[in-house]
Image (cartoon, rainbow, N blue to C red; front, side, top):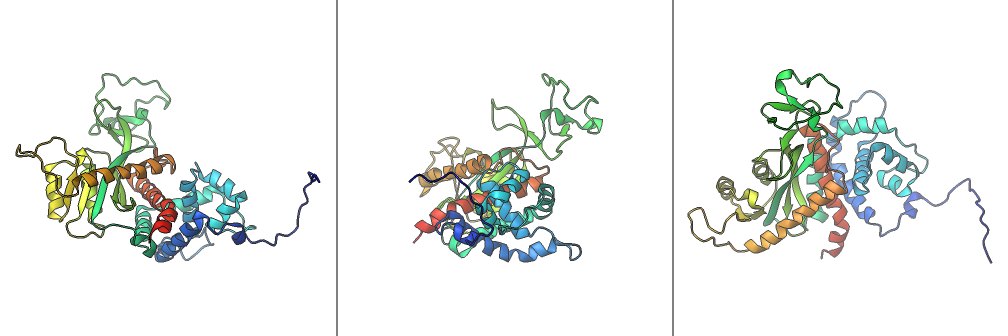
Length: 358
């Protein structure tokens, strides 16, 4: 018998939102780990809020909402609030009940700026990799490092000489501009939109752009990022950031570090040997500094194959999590957003890794 196309509304629902989420849904494992990590950050959250005034958005709800924004490529806070209004899965993950009101997008963004700092994002990433269900997946013997460019929230028209006080040429912001024949350098020019952005090009034949440089340190066993940061875009930023990230992680003596040819610099490899790390860098030439044939150390070819997996982290954070072009200004806020996106990439891979681990 054919059913009728009629809609009968019910006054009450007797099925809880918890029961509507499948037991084997990947977000269940992610939410368990995130809740335990956020519980360890409770003291940091308390210090960011005043004891007076009316209650604000709970920081745990806010950070879970930001994770959904990275997982599902939600472009803006306004679109996130719209989906929280009717998506039961999103409500359950954030911690809202079926009848709880959704926050205003402007209020959400204001609280996000207060909470999402570089320090909180770094502690959140560290809490994930030190979690008991994640730490056993990591290697302390083999690592890889690399950097990527993050386009700044500033146009080339805002890159003006420093001598004019940042006022440009006095014309409108949509003026016609022709930069041919002009020498535009970071020493003499700065962006009026984001002074922290730097003019940088990835290589010969590539176009220069205002950008920041994001860095990640990956362990080679599971391909999870154990550290991340953002710096100004310079020719030495990758090597300097790599040394700082290596000092913040747990590693065994004699650990290896893989990298591309940009890290094949004598001073950098000397600094690694001082830290007790064996450099496994892609070679610029087939000979050593003394002109002798290069003899690869044990495991060198394997490190070079595994180091390419770090590009998967950058690819996900820049395309899915929206970090190809940042919507923040300043190194600190760009770093917080990038590090949080790297942490989200670790979380999205955990359901399969934890299920496949012995």
